[in-house]
Amino acid sequence: MLFRWGDNQLLDPDGRVIASVTAEVLKIGKDRLLIESSQGTLVGFRARATSTSGAVYTMGKRGVTVQILEANCDGRLYVLQRTNPWRRTRKLLDAEGNLLARIKAKVSGELEIELFDAALNPIDTAFITYACALVDTPTRLMI
Image (cartoon, rainbow, N blue to C red):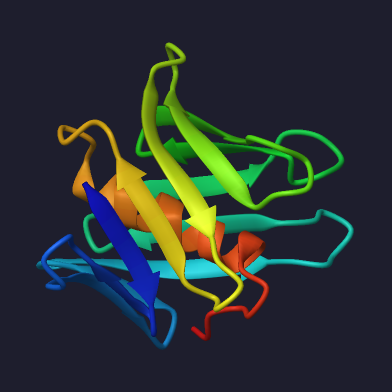
């Protein structure tokens, strides 16, 4: 299944909006996550979101570069690895190393998400892929 982030909206394969971002708030159905991100600081890239229920979502780089990112979505752990140092395509893996999705940043600023596991938590998917858009798209999405 192919999903897409563009114009601050996450669209499903049929073009329906399943998540959106306005004024630093990620909306997924009835859920709301307040997003904070830092880029270009001494820390480097880091994103954090808190849901209205108090759940915490974080994503940041594992090492010196953004080649490998780690996400913790309310206790669910993920790793995002670039498939090639010269390309902005990532594999989304769960804590056991299972491939869940492939995320590709396009020159247009859009993000394509090829989802391999339909059971992946939709809030996790929206947060992780939006955070990838913040770090990987050449034309940064506005929040």
